[in-house]
Image (cartoon, rainbow, N blue to C red; front, side, top):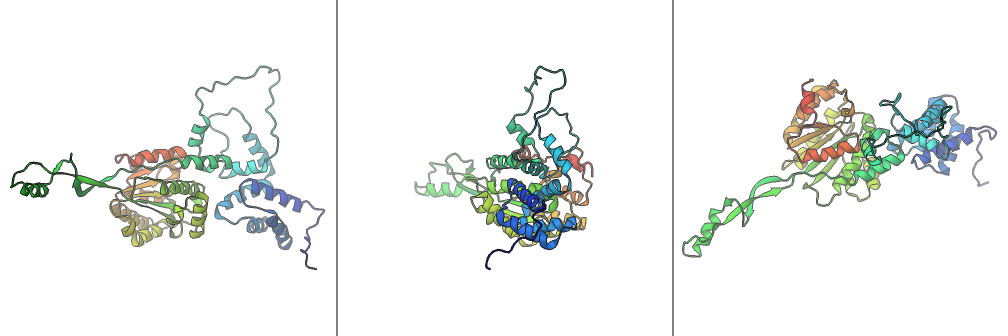
Length: 415
């Protein structure tokens, strides 16, 4: 017979049905999961067995996950669906409209809201019951509350649901990075210039018998610097790297942008140049191509080695003529801090302005205690956060104000 082999999982059991429902939740969360992968997963579980939870996790992981950015979503939905059924009820209660205090008891981890929304798709949420004896509607003064747009701007990228992340990407596509032009030593003719061109003036006087009838004036030309971005794509930065790469894609494709050229690199365990991939007009296609080029996505971190590689192989090519560098990383590195400090010092000396964007700065009690952060901080010109849309808008203002150092000076006093 040439037909498909039969699935040997017990049809009376609930495992094939549960795997099918689990696949629907993955598809609702944005993962490309079709019927073929569901059949493949059921057959793989049949072959691998259902004894150890870790084996079951990696069996389904191999069948359903095909992109690096989908690993975290898969892990959260797996945890909610297969290991912690009570947490699903907790997440459902968190998604109900309710009045909350200033600080919630538990902050959802990365991709938890997206996973809960996928599992709860199509489920009717019960309306909050009124207390006994309460008949009148409670009125809430919302005059000082944030609008939906303001709330989205202040929301952490890691805590966004799938719909909020899509809306955030549309908002990021409207941002700009204005860089002020630099005054060049070269000059050009100008009717209202402030530099006298004596050679041109004397050449004009020679045509009138030596009489100076007009003073030739010149002005300095302006030139645009290069913009270079080095983005950390290690596991600790995975919740922010994709959004920040969307931001860099928007900047790379902006018309009339305030820089000569833009170069984008990713760093994890190695340095990867993804500049040509971000030149594609479609953001999803550009990031997919960049993800295939950068094989160390969500891997380890070797900040010192990757910055040394950039200084050795790329600094002379892309940092000429007063380039501005955006260093996007949390600074968490287990290698020798002295090596990282030497690489950061050379990077700062090679560029006009080194701006460090660190998502960890979102915490109010942040202090430079990690060795990598202490090694980097003295060698940057600007230190700012990059964890939500509002912080990216502040970055646009920082680029237009050369005197703005962000939180650098305050944190330098804590070293």
